[in-house]
Image (cartoon, rainbow, N blue to C red):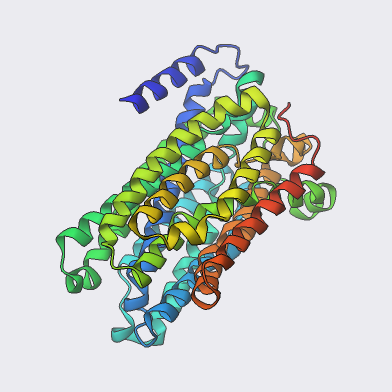
Length: 439
C-alpha cells in the first residue's frame, strides 16, 4: 500500500508539470524507466540465482561444488565484459535505423538469450558443448543489456525540477529490489515445493520462461513511449542522441573513468549482499536455501525503502555528499563481514538486513552519478558507457572474487575487497568537484 501511495504521489507530481516543450509528461518517462529497469533486473537476478543453485550441478558436475560455483560465476561475468560492446554496436544500429529498431533488436536478443538458457541441455546430455552454449547465451544477454539503453533515465533527470533531481534519479533504481523480490520468490517457491531432482531436472527453467514473457511486455511498454513524435522531439532538443564512441572517449575520458569509479562501493556491495552470501550459505551452511532467499527478499524491501530515502537525502545534501557518506559507511560495514557471516543465523540475518539497507541508500544515487558532467552532445552515449564500465569494474567479477577469496583466505579477505571499493569511490568523488546535477 505504501508503494502504491509513493507511485501515485510521484506520478501526480510529475503529471502536474505542464511546461514540457514537447508535450511529454515526465510521469510517462518515469513509468518507462521503472518498467524497463525492473524487467532487466529480473533477468539479471534469475541468472544470478541460477548460477548458485543450478549451474554448478547442471553444467559443471565434473567439479566439486565450490569449483563448479566458481566456474558458474566466471560465466556470469561474461555479460559484464560484453555489455560495453553491445552499447557500441547498438549505438551504430540506432544511428542507421533509428531508436525503435535498436531497442526492439536489443530486447529481442535479451529475451531470446534468456529463453534459450531455459532450453539448454545439461552437461550430462551434451558434454562441453553445453557449457559453450551457456557462455554464448550469457554473452548475448550482456550485448543485449548494453543495447537496451534508451536514454529515458537521462531524459527524466533533465526534465525533473532542479531541486528534485535526486528524487527522480532513484526511480529507475527501484527496479533492482523489485527484480530481486520476484526472482527470489520464484526460486524460493520452486525449492520449497519440488524435490531436488525435479528442481535440477526441469523446475529451474520456469523463471527463465517468465523472464522472456516479462521482456515482451516491457518491450511494448517502452516502444509505446519512445516511438511517439513528442519523445523524438524532446530527445533531440536535449541532444540525447548517439555520438561517435572514439570521439566521445577522447573528449570525455576523464568523466568516463570517474563515473565508473564514483559508485564503486555501491556496485561492489550489490553482489556482496545478493549473490555472494547465497553461494556461501549453499556451500558452507546447513540453513535452508529457500528460507535464506526469503530473508534476502525482506532485505530487498529495506533496500527499496533506502532507495526512496536516498532521493530525499540527495536533494537535501547533494548527490556527491550522499555518495561520499555512504561510501564511508560501506567501508565501516566491510569490517563486520567476517563477524556477521560467521556469526550463525543471527549474525547472517543482521548482515543481510543491514547490508541491503546500506545498498538501497547508496545504490539509489549510483546511476548516472556523473552524467551531468558530460557535455550535452556526449551525455546519451556517455551515460550508457559509464553504466557499463561501473558494472564491469564494480560488480562483474564480485561474486567470483568474493567466493574465491573467502574459500582460500577466509572472510576477512572479503572485507578488504569491499573496503577497496569504498576507497575507490571516495577517490573518484574527491577528484570530481562538479558532481552536483545541473543542466
